[in-house]
Length: 465
Image (cartoon, rainbow, N blue to C red; front, side, top):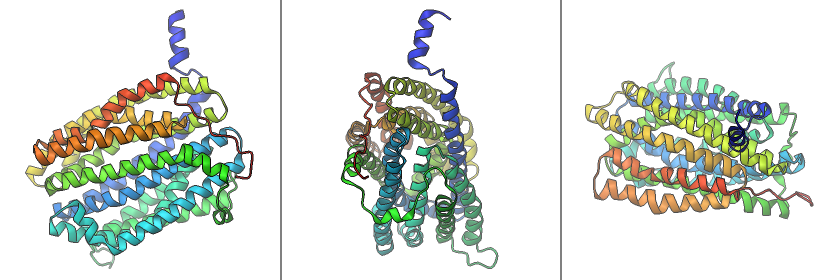
């Protein structure tokens, strides 16, 4: 090995086998979990697709509102992961437990608020996304059941995600396996009226999801309180507010992640509104493309989560130079995964369209949008690893929040609205316009990584957390 090559490896590629063992222990369960989750989503779409394009559009648009809550939970999870990973790396388990208390308190309050709004205003919510009366009526039926899902799903989602900070990535996998079996079975029964149950159509899909999310919640609660041995969590912590010092660190390093992911959810909803006003054929096509997109990015989801946890723990240990090297390694891995994901969409995308019963005009739209998605997936992989994994794990949440605000709300949303609602460009070009922030951030955040200014260590708790 030449001296120049050795220097390159030292700077950009971690050679320590222990690092890759730690990454694999987190990455593999998350990839398997993501595959299962996307399999559930695909089966949901296929089953609802048997009911027609209006049903696909209704469930897809109703889920866009629900996804605002899911993104909020992901932001809460990210905030918890940033702090709990660093405090776990610093071997401060007491503070890690208080972080768990805080994120659960937030998700319980948020879930209750979303449940009330969804139950009281389902028709009004659907009216935001579309003007087609049949889609609004079906979506409102779906949302009335969805109101019961927020709390159990929010708690289980945040718990299984934040558990990764202490090296436990398997809980989410086990929960997803249980959810997969229950959701598929319940959907089949309640959508089509099998085993003596009434045929509820679109509402049946929501009932199936409710049953599955309840099982997830019970699984997580029993595991955390009875079987988890590292954290030794006690539910009585939920009755106590966090100390001033911990809340200050949560506000400094965690709150920007919540704001960032909440704005991402809002942006996703506006994307659905833009596409919804372009017609239900385009909404149906986008729902199908989204399923394939998520299947193609399961590996980057695992790599992103691993990057956030591993780098967070490294920063918590005070090993900043090693964190920089790990950051470059994860970036290189994301480029490889992004190329693979884009190729996967090109190969399997058109094949997957045949699984749905949609009109020829919708098929044509879906094919072109799938081709555009293959390009987007590459940049999605790179920017996701940087923004949601590497830099976030290093505590650079405020910078990332600003980046999301600028590129989503100054570039993607206005450009997408212009392309779709004013210029009436092809759906494929509209999709690229709506995702232009992925391309910009993929380049811009590399320079942030190179600067080394992205590492921010959480302060040591010197008082009661």
